Image (cartoon, rainbow, N blue to C red; front, side, top):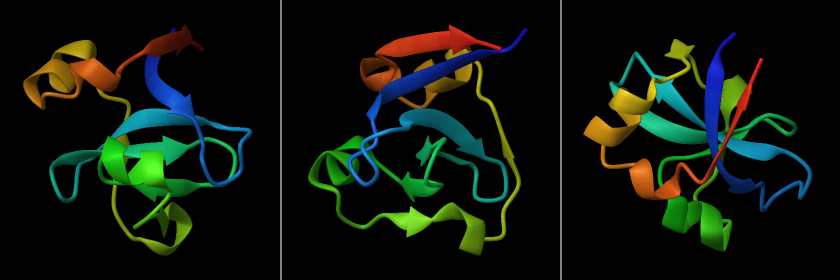
Length: 85
């Protein structure tokens, strides 16, 4: 089972969770909506629903980050929730 960390519900579709995802191509974390596939590079943009991008239109490799990776990138404060699959 994998553990996923997420911030809050998506401001765009209001249904999906914003899952913290690791962009391996650009070596960064971003918030990814599991429902509408929108993404944000930081929590303040997600909070204001601005500067979002449709992740399906961007070519990069991703993976589910570990809690350690989230902490190293100073994203611990937005890892508000988790679930396992």
